[in-house]
Structures are given as C-alpha cells and as structure tokens.
Image (cartoon, rainbow over all chains, first blue to last red):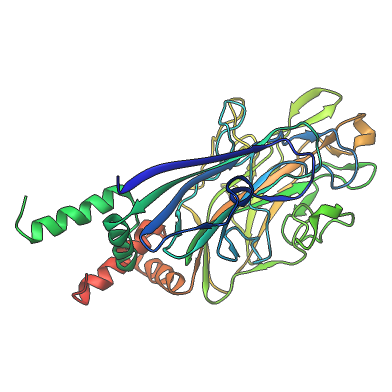
Length: 181
Length: 210
C-alpha cells in the first residue's frame, strides 16, 4: 500500500471565536511528513453557512461562518489578492458535508504538495462565537510512501503532476526500459 | 509553490442604517476596509470591507481568473424573496471585460447566471471559459453593481440584514511558472497547470534529461 487515499475530519461545538489548529488539537502534535513520504492534498472543506442574510445586526458580526486554510511549515497557502493574510476558503465555496443546499464552487487545482520533511496543518476559522453550533472541516489527501514517494519526487522534478496514474505511468516506463513485463 | 489555487470572497452589507440603492457600483477589492471590524479579525486585513487599494500584479506574477460569481438572491421585505439581478464585472486596468453586443458598457454577469454559493435552486448558466488573464504589471478589480433591489440594513427589514457576496477563483503563477505562463501566451496556448507542466516536460526532454 504505497499510495493511499486518506481522509481526516474534525468537528467542534466550541463557542469560542478564532482559529483552531485542527491536527494539533485532535492529534496532539504538529504533523510532520517523513523523509520517505510525500503527501498530495486533493480537497478541503468546512461547514457552510447561508450567504444571503444574517440575523446578526452588529456591523461585521455577519462574518460568523467557518473558513479553512492549509499551512505548510510557516506559510499559509491561501492569500488575499494583495498577498495579505486570509482566513482561507469559506465553507460556502467548499461545503462539508455536501448537499443540495450548497454545491462546491472552489476546487483545489493545482493540488497542494507536502514534501518530505515539511510540517502541515489545517486551520479552521470558526468565525463568531456561537455556542452549540457544530462546525466541521475535512481534508482529503493521498499519501505516497516508500518507492512511490521517491517516484513522486522524481515526477515533481520533471514537472509532472503527482497523481496515482502518473506514478503508475512512471513505473511502466521503467519496466519497459528494462525490457521486462 | 509556484502555482497556487486562490479564492477571493468580498462581502457587501450596509454598514449604517439605510440602503445601498439600485445601480450602485462597488469596487470589491479597492474599497477601504470596514470601519467597524470585529475584534476577532486581529491583524487580518478586513476581508469583508475590501483590501484598501487596487490590486496590482507584480512583474513576477501571472493571474488566471477562472470563475466569478455573486449572490443570486436578496430579501426585500421580511421573508419575501425576489431575484436580484446584481452583477459582477471584471476590470483589467481601465477596461471592463464584459460588454454588450454593440460594445457598450455592461454591468457584468448577474448572480442568477453565476451564483455563489451554488445550490439546487441556483446553478451556473455562465462559466468563465476562456479564462481571464491578468498579465504582469496589470491592475485588476471586481466591480459589483447592485440590482433592482436595494441592500437593506437590519433596521429596515426587522431582524434580517442583507449580505451580498462576490467571489473570484483564480490561479496565481509566480516566479518561473509566471515566465512559462507568458511564454504559453505568446505561443497561443491556454495557461493552465497542465500546460505549464507540459512546457516544463518539453524543456527537460529537449535537454535529454528525465
């Protein structure tokens, strides 16, 4: 099992506003990619909130919806257009769970690579304090391990997208070059 | 990280009692941050109020706008809803992208054609294909034009306030990938992650490397 589709989800009902380091909170430590691993994040999402109106009358307080952000080492992936810090992608654009009420607007293409030796974290912005409201997020990723991680690094050098089918293509090419079958 | 999928969401809501009348145009990025940012916004630029200045693409960057959208509906009175044909326009330097067939000015793509968020009730009638390129050195802006219904404040409609959101999904190419993006543009090939990778592979093959 050198290529494995993986899924990590988190939920909280905390009423405290602010950002949660999801993996550190749930798993107790920062996530570190080993030298023999290569991670490709395919999809992220978080709880969507209705966009058309808000019952919160205070100026600014309609910003009560979750956002999800990916952090690699000390760098947050999603930025504002001017390069300033952003909360990430709103749940309205990447709903989790998916339903007829909210369809996906944002697709993570190109994907996010977490290279060997890098730390990674999912940040969940909870928005305004709301007691008892469940807010969720998820990340779907592919974990390449062992020889497949070596091939993934090779594909990266070659400028080829790291995907299971390209890993297989590279293996086939190696076998063909050796004349084996 | 030389190619990155990015997403901008701007929010419009009337900050004081009263309305934002029909026909009002709002520069989503260039407008100043909201006066009353909530305490929890911390050091972040106030995302809802705008970024405070026009957005300028650096010499080492290349932007491809792949999707735009806006709220398809607003509430006009109590719980009664109407379709609000508010529209979103992309502006590159001084040129607005979407035009009428006669070349005259247009307010852009209505929220009911490019809804955000997407749902069973509202799905895309318009998709931005081909994409919009923002070249190095160019400015870009999203302009929202309020539709037939005003955007009301909470005191006008009782307990509810209207919230309009405008979004752009774009890919930011930086550094060497921005150079390749310019090269693809010269070659007449669409700028996409797959084509950037193809160009890199071609360069490697030409060098005899693997």
